[in-house]
Length: 595
Image 1: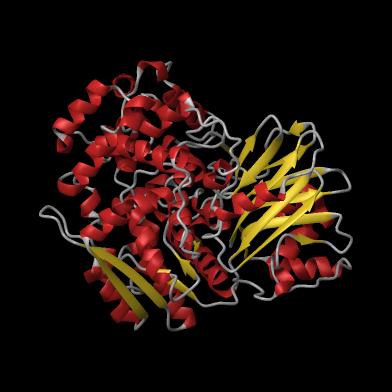
Image 2 (image 1 turned 180 degrees about the vertical axis):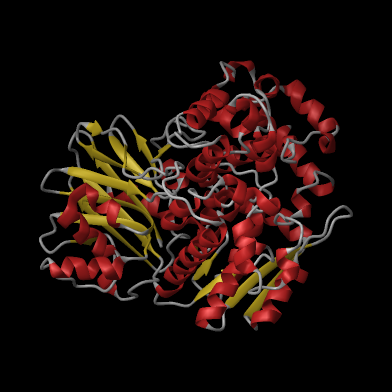
């Protein structure tokens, strides 16, 4: 797990080592253990290392083959690398390290671009091939690891976060009009390849791309998730097959590491099930929980549930309680570490939790993805029961704003047409899925989740040099789960099969509890010091001069912030303030504070 960056110049001029080093400054938190740079005329590669597999210098990056004709920088973990290593050794290849980076390098030598099809895990990497003078870049199937890039007049630049790219001073920081609507309609999700900034793009999950002196090729998909059923199974067969696939996913993410692995335990079904599967097979588990101050309307922790799991399995547990004043004090710091503006209230929670956990351990498993893969959210049954076109059924329960309200939210210079509805409609209708809910889940897992919980957890946790592994997004488990009939997933208020697997393994109180969301009361209710922060941001000279928002709409929301919520209960005024704060911190102020 690391931070990567690089540059390939278009016109053959030599890459500036200083530029690579400038990017690496903004990747240090992702890889605090080591740094190195490789420059060879028009190519430059940079790497910050978080040592997890093969802790020796033999796995240092950038890594090269024996003849230095191929070089790689890689971020992620390949869970089947021991098996691939044996396969490559059988073909006569020799290895000088015991890690997964060299396995990717040798796999590329053996299979070229098809090497990505062999990899099981999370990854983003770039390989420079001197023999053909091309750069090969790829991203894992579910987009767990980030890959941002920019095509300037002079070169192709890439990095693990946007802050590194912005540090080059070469990026067009104008606002992407289509992305702006996605930002305010899909709770800050801007699907690849766009970002909120015109000059920064991201490689889509499950895609690779070639780059050479003449430019970039079109990204090519090497994986597609199909929700068309090919086999019939009864309920018990589904439960057993999912259980086996989940156990394998959990085992992979424990065993492939040369350092201890823990679990972020929220007290919900998903993380508790991970603890149960690990404890049942592997013994004592390291677990970590976080809680916050209560508000009159809502408790700030779920310790009663996480404590029940801890007691049941006798885990080696640490729990942290964070005061509201610390949440608000640290919020700007967390925003400065976001690669893109993210409105979810639990982003700062993961940031503050990771700060503490990283003092004890380098790798954790986390429950992200279970709700999307196994239909755990409350809006899925509502969509399922609704009538109308695909986009009508989806938008009525999911969109933060319909187009008419969006047109009132932003400056008229940023209003053209309803890009978001068209994008989502096209995706749902071309999915080829058996049913509408299949299409929704397919889109959620392959697109929406990537730029919401997955990106949120990766960026906030990696800001403290902590690796997050997500078993529910093991691509083989996802491929199996998408075949399950939606009625079975939706049964029993969602995640029916996971509840069946959990019964008898983890406490019933955790299984039968109402669906919960990461409690973060200080950032859910826009009042007091939080309201003052929001007001100061939206009324700042920078915000007014930027001119993104309708000032009349800003005034309307600030007059009664608790009255304006999205369909998923997000604060509309916070959505606006977060975007403006992110732009001030990362574009105007070049943030990303050091540890």
